[in-house]
Amino acid sequence: MQSLQRIEVQFLPGAAKDLQGIPLRTAQNILTRIERYAEGHPSDIKKLKGRGEFRLRVGDYRVLLVKTGGRAEIHRILHRREAYR
Image (cartoon, rainbow, N blue to C red):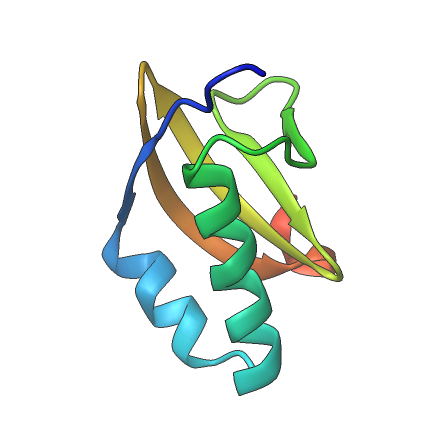
């Protein structure tokens, strides 16, 4: 069985503020998915065209992040209708 590689995750101030405005149950689900991603589990993550960011899809929300080696900086957590503007 393949060993999972841990990823260090850092929330930037904008992402922390976004998370506070999301309903509690949804925010918990988002944090769970981020933790699974950080543990190295396969995730619904995709590089965004024309941007240096990736997005992690969690229901109707998108976690926008920048990956550098074994590290990910979470920039924003937005509803899908706002995420790509």
